[in-house]
Length: 63
Image (cartoon, rainbow, N blue to C red; front, side):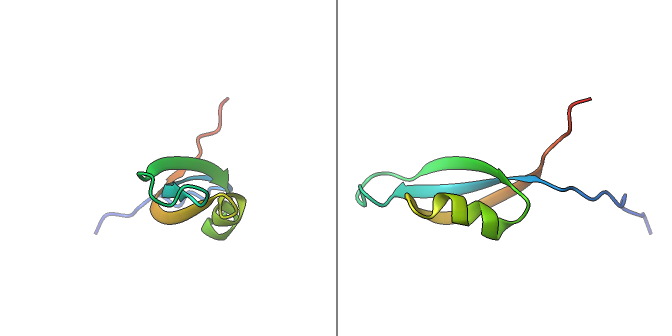
């Protein structure tokens, strides 16, 4: 059985399909935000958007 590397990330890029609350009949757009967890990511966008989770990517540190 193959072992997966044990890499811990402190931040992720969260991707959401989002509709602006002020324009409910608009088409969804993809928005991205960097946060430690999905809850924090949603909290930063929820005031302006209705969100649907689309993905989570690790943030790569620049050397």
